Image (cartoon, rainbow, N blue to C red; front, side):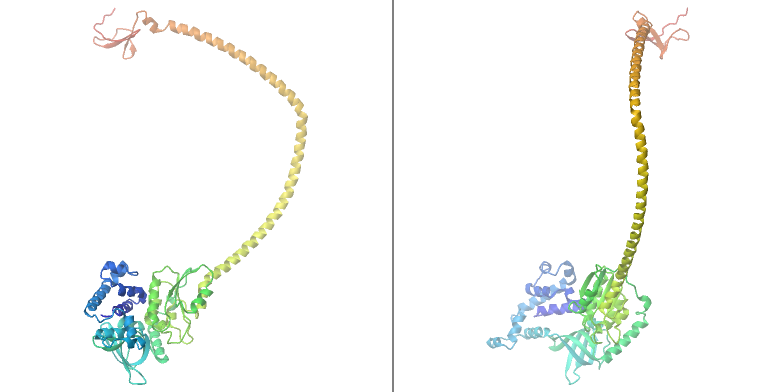
Length: 515
């Protein structure tokens, strides 16, 4: 593996084909070039490169480090292998600098084939020929194709994963176009054309394949009207699949109404069979996105250029897409199968925007009608209220006039009564003051009488107070809180209390003597 860069790019092509995704979703070219430049040997060195984090390392890290290890080992063994392929290619090109090369500059076979393959790998081409032989072996397809005008032949290698995307059935004598790059397979020195796409040639062959696939899918019910889904009302989030460099994207966006749409574009090739990978990858991407509808558009074209939209895998992916799909391809003769599988199949991208705008435009029209009705009803009501207010104003004016007249009559009567009322108030004040003076005298007399009575009663209470007798030498005998008044029923040994003037004695009956 004298050419690490070529090995990495070939590995990426194979991985992208297996996973049916775009190349950059495996690893960007800049990341591969950085691997060639830094030659990482550990996980830490590899994940330090931009574009490779833990997820990428988990998926591809071991394979990349193995290729780097193999390249480093061969580089040590073969000093003649150049690490800078661009400079080596420049040396082999017929320019003025070539004459300055020393005559004893000799390449090994491996190094020379690396130089040649590096140059060939830059030459991508589409080649047309007739199939002379084919063989499936493992995960690869080996074909031979020849020139229709001469005996020129070419060996073609293709991964079966790429072949399955084409949706065609290979056969001897079939005229095809393969697209890819050339290389010399170093173990055998054999020239191969490594194809990544294959397509039929000729309107007749394409039409035959179209009719056969259409009949097959129609029999399965893939195009049945009852499978079509309707757009949700007022779609907002739109997924868009088309080429960002095409003119149709401007037609679509310019005709899309100003209703607050959020359009998410996935750039995809929409020309020829090479577009199949891009379209499938875009459909896969949008499956997990929060969109209300998916739009797939291009600006029409010949049957040859629309092969991707008659591809079985693309058609099935559209039919199985979890949300409504609008497919506007545009073909005068035969409707692309992708449009038959879609939920909506307008003829142009502009017509596609009309479908998306429809519910919003209806809502806008209804709002305008409601607005006119509300304004009209409010205007009528304002006129009614104005008329009623004018009537109430006249009525209030009449009522206030009568009220003011009554007020003036009462005011006059009050003014006439004020002198009499003043005299009555003065007389009432004098009577009230006299009554208050008499009441005060009576209260003071009653208070003095009550004070004398309380003093007299206090003297009597003090005279008859039992405790006063105790001070004279008497005592009060009690038993269980009751005063002892007799010896009757009392027994020797019972307890009793004797209350004296300065305290209480507890005693026990020693003897009971009755009179």
